[in-house]
Each structure stands twice: as C-alpha cells, then as structure tokens.
Image (cartoon, rainbow, N blue to C red; front, side, top):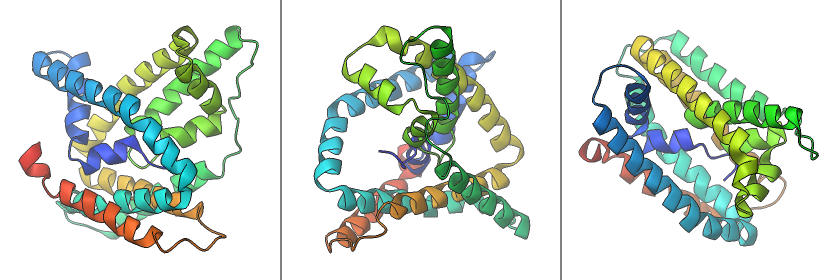
Amino acid sequence: MPGVSGGSMAMILGIYEKLIQAVNILIGRGGEKKKAIGFLSLFSVGAIVGILGISGIVVRLLDCYPMQMVFFFSGAVAGGLPLIYREAKKENISVVHYIYLAIGVAVVVFLSILPKGLFQIDAGGGFWSVTMQFLGGVIAAIALVLPGISVSHMLYVLGLYKGIMAAIAEFDLIVLLPFVFGVSAGVLLSARGMNYLFDRFPGYTYFVILGFILGSIGELLSSALGAAPPLSCYPLMVLGFCSVYLISGKKKASV
C-alpha cells in the first residue's frame, strides 16, 4: 500500500535489526552464515506468500473502501510507535534527538511533494530505459530498507510504478531484471549503512526513523482530507493500532 513502509512494519514486528544483521553477515566475512541464510530464506518465502496471497485482497479492499483502509493502515503504523520510542530512549535523550526527529518528518514531507515521473522510462526501451530501471531499483531499495519511507510512493515519484506493476501482473520477468538487479544492489548498500548507524548512533538513528514514521502517517491521512470520513473509519483505526501494538508488545518473546 502506498504510504506504508515495509521497513516500518519490520521494525514494528521486531525483526528489522535482525534482517539488517543477517544481510550484513551474508555479504561480509565470518558470522553464522547458515543461520543468516535460513532466516532470510524464511523471511523471503513469507514475503512472497504475503504478496501473492494477500495483495489481491488488499487491492480490492482499497478499491471498495479506500478511506477505511487508509485509517486502518494509519492506525497500524501508529501502533508500532511506542515500541520504537522505547528503543530510542535507551540512551539519554536531548534536544538534539528531537531535531533529528524533525529532520525525519521533513524528509518524508519533501518526498511527498516531489513531482511525479522524475525517472520516467522510455516506453521504447533501450540502454536509457534499462539504466533508469536499475537506478530506480537502487533508490526503491533504499526506501525499502529505511523505515517510514514508502517504496510504492518512491516508485510513483520515479515514474516506475505502473510499468513495474504491469510487468509483475503479466509475469514479464525479463523486463524486470534491471530493476531487480538495482533493488539487490540497493539493499546491500543500505543494509551496510543502517548497520553502521545502529552501531555508532543508535539513539539518533531511532529518532530519525520515528520522524520518518510520523511523516508517513501524516502522508497517509492527508489522502483523506477534503471529505468527511465515514464513522467506520475510526473503529478501524483503533483496531489497526491495537493489533500492531499487541504484536509489537510480544517482540522479545518472538524474536
């Protein structure tokens, strides 16, 4: 769903840092590579099952009940904020931390106002089209790894969303290869960067992520402005919040 970050959901579910560490173990030297491969394989299978099994249902719900789904997902994203804040406040909090939070919100707002189609690819294909898909994949992967930044929104901004979705729907895998290679390269680079930030500046990193997530909630709810939301939106928002809050509360027991 555009506006909902995969990185945010991974962090809310308590597996984000484990994912980053597993990727770094896989591409680095030493470490428990078999364990990392096993964890990433299970995660990948779950992701594929989720995409193939649930995406159609979500798309239909978005078509039939767009505003209710926006409120439900906004509540779900907000439900993970207490967990992330608890992680962030493990070190002494200062005014500087809140400046980083504001920077995170500002980044999401800036991305939301970028003109669409910045990397619009040429329908005729060729070297330029392949290059743009590869670079778009790298940028989309960075959005995938960073919590609070929606990959779908980034694809919209880059002008790649319709083409990528059409290729997936038609199982035109050859067309997707440049994008897939770009995503792979971007994930590896981003995972290394996030691992470094969590090791060196965990508090600041968590506050920037909090800003990303707060900004993404605002972006989601902004799509509901201009019309009075149905009454059913509010209990769905509470349901989304409570569901994720309860799941995130079991983080230590499940990870």
